[in-house]
Length: 114
Image (cartoon, rainbow, N blue to C red; front, side, top):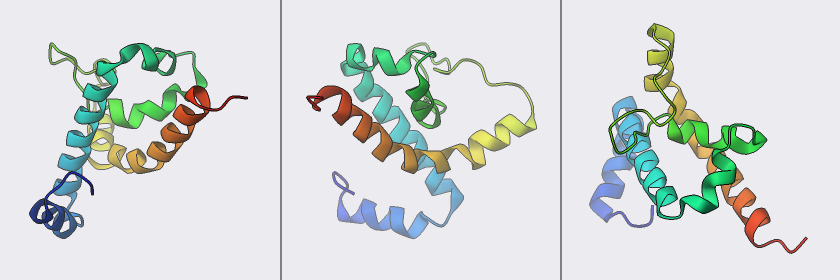
């Protein structure tokens, strides 16, 4: 993982089998990703539009993010144990598959001359 020291890389690998490390990493990654989006929010506006079919690509990331006032970016989660269980034990699994899709979408919309 670029940007991480050898010690941190090892601790993530060692802890990768433990759900706690994975959840923390997902939260940290999502927070950083959202902060980077906000640096150039105009380029992300189209993907943040709920009517855009590709908006779903961001959901796995945004579910862990809060705005400047500490409120969930996606709005208040539905109450109940199923939602809490999904956020804590399932949502992070969707982050890794959407990153290549977001990269491809970014390339097609910004660099592809067709």
